[in-house]
Image 1 (cartoon, protein in one colour):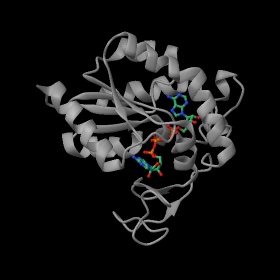
Image 2: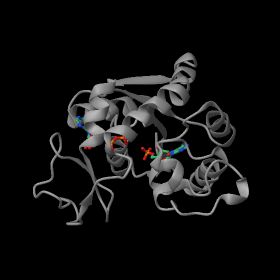
Image 3: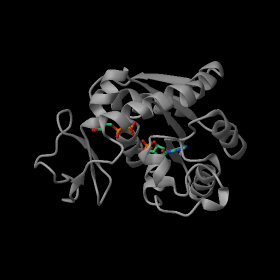
Image 4: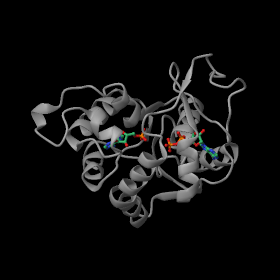
Length: 216
Ligand code: ADP
Ligand code: AMP
């Protein structure tokens, strides 16, 4: 399969970003991540929608979902521009799932399965490069020099929503809104379940083999 269209599902902290970066590099496809796109547009004025908050950032800092209108538009534009992609962080509820269904076909749907306590440990120890977006963990995947990106030398920072309290809130929001999305794809018989509690390299072996098997 050239330029596969891949969806990667999993709770916050399951390792979607980590594996998506490798998929994008291995298969030469775009990494489309709504979380990163929204972080770049945290202050965007969405007051015309007349909803709970006036910017995406306020939803994000509370651990809540940003309104569908905003996120669907980001994904539509990104998919139109991509020749093969790995979609990470979307869809997060039923209405986004229906919207995605109406704008593209998927070749592979991966699901990284990780237990809740492990998710909290991963989220609270996560560090991200402010220049290239590479992700580290203070214990599980530390950079060679603390606070400095191995790949580009950029400074590492902790995301504002990676506190224990907001991490738990996000996992709750996931259970309520996004777990049904996983069930939807499972019911369709297309869900490729992967044990996300292995080491990053072991998870990658399974992810790569699954995508390659789909290609043949
Ligand atoms: P997501 O994109 O699903 O929120 P990330 O890929 O950002 O998750 O990973 C969350 C944190 O867990 C990061 O700190 C990352 O370094 C770490 N991590 C990712 N995969 C694993 C793994 N298989 N084992 C241990 N830690 C991991
Ligand atoms: P992530 O980087 O995937 O952990 O997402 C960080 C935050 O961005 C989430 O907690 C939400 O507030 C927001 N977000 C990301 N993707 C979506 C989405 N598909 N729908 C709604 N909100 C989203």
